[in-house]
Image (tube, rainbow, N blue to C red):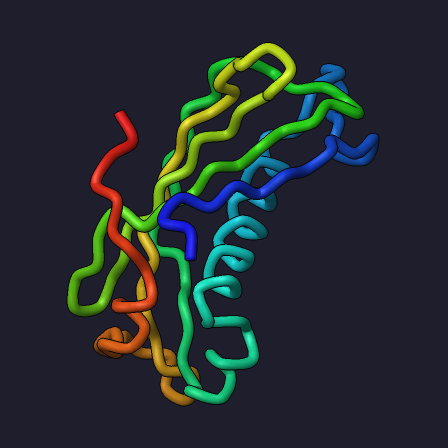
Length: 139
């Protein structure tokens, strides 16, 4: 099971904005797709969260855009879990373009684990936190 998950994506025409590069919202979508894919390979697909009647919601996103991306380029979203607390988990991302080794963006999301019935924070189950290796930093 990968501590750092690599999520590959080809930039779609519909992700391009009026300035001719990838729209900022596309990066958020890629981050979410990568987080869900990483969770799935760690044994926590969406169906398992549904069965537990609990899952993740975003408390905050932070994204630093460094270099633009363009249509048809290959990008890789590297993602890893940087910490688990009682109710929250910090996930980090590095979005890269392999063709020139450019880092397009660095980002992080603070996720809160909630129960679906009341939409209130819930303690993260041990079996969930133990499914992921915490990686403090890649540097």
